[in-house]
Length: 152
Image 1: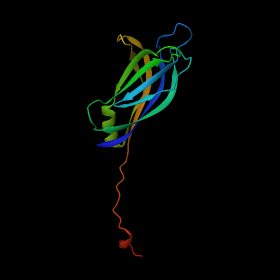
Image 2: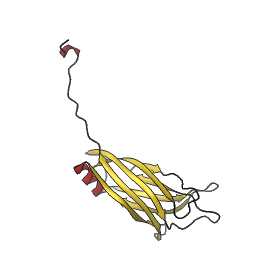
Image 3: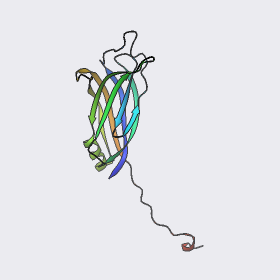
Image 4: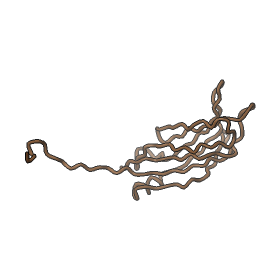
């Protein structure tokens, strides 16, 4: 099993459809990979076309436990006086990315647009994301003797 760092570059979203009646919505993204979750910055007042330009890192093992090699993006609208509104979600499957990264040392999914679907499974816009995986090089330590084995 190899371990590495998977970096998610969250660029922007377009055409999300405004959920706020007054003013523009304040979208943010919960990004989940296996049991790890990261939260993006809130794009205050940016409405249906927010821009984040943010990198978030995850620890990734391949092959690891389970077969759940996907990144889920849950887009929400930050509300002050009520619960945050769910806008939609998108999923990227990264099993092949991890396999290539383990073999070659690193791998990249170029920044691309992915469909965002709402709770009703209808199209809600698109999110632009890039992903890289870099294998962590394991250090092998030589066994060194103690004081008694030295030449002093």
